[in-house]
Each structure stands twice: as structure tokens, then as C-alpha cells.
Amino acid sequence: MQWQCKKFLELDVPTLFTIMKARVDVFVVEQACPYPELDEFDRAFDTHHVYASVDGCIAAYARVYVQTPECIAIGRVLVSERYRGKGLAATLMEKSIAVAINYGSCSEIKLSAQTYLLKFYAEQGFKSIGDPYLEDGIEHQDMILIPERK
Image (cartoon, rainbow, N blue to C red):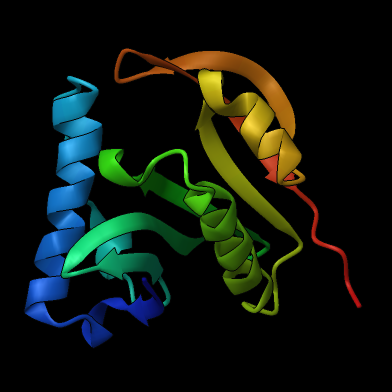
């Protein structure tokens, strides 16, 4: 398994395709949620794509991007079905949080969690904020992590 962190223009075409396919497989097909999966954050110059690949397939993926000057967001977090239950999600979040902290101006890290994953994200240091809401027919909860400064 190989972990990578690349900006959009650093991704080669085959890797970009496997990332897009993994995201569509999980968020559109598996979750039966037709919505515009790709957006402008994907190709923003300061978005980082964090992923693990195995034999040319995406095992785990997240994107880390600037939401506001003070807030870095982690989104599109996934572990492909055949790699679930192996601890990859925690490693993915550890790597994604490290990328977010390295933005420098980051005073908070935010994510929109599907509510069945609240416990997992709380274990990563995130705290729920606001009320749950429906997004594309799936209940979500905003969460925030205030990174420790060394």
C-alpha cells in the first residue's frame, strides 16, 4: 500500500481516474445518492488529495482544502469497500489532519460527517457543532477540530 498526497495538477490521468471512480462508486452508486460528485474544490490550486493505492486501485481517499482563510476542510472521506475494517480510515484521517495543519493559517479543521460516523470522527478529535441536517438525503453533522499548536 502506498500513501500519497498530491495537488490536482500533480495527479496523473490514471490516478485521477481511479480517484474519481472510487468516489463515484462510494458516494453515488453505493450510497444511491445522485448528485454532482465533482466540484471546483477538486481542482483548486491549494486542494490536496490524500490517498492510499493498492495495485492501481484507490483503497482510501480524502481531500483537504481551504474553506475560509482560517478554516481547512476535510471532505470526500472514503475507504473502498474491499479495504474496510483494516484500520485505513484512522490512518487516512491522521494523514489528512497533518496536511490540514501544515496549511499554516489553519486555526480550525472542519468536516461534514455522516451521522453514523460521529463516534469515529470524535475518536479522531473532532467535536460536533450545530444540529444534524440532511444533505443529499443523508443525515450529516458538522464537526470541528482545533489543532494543537506546538
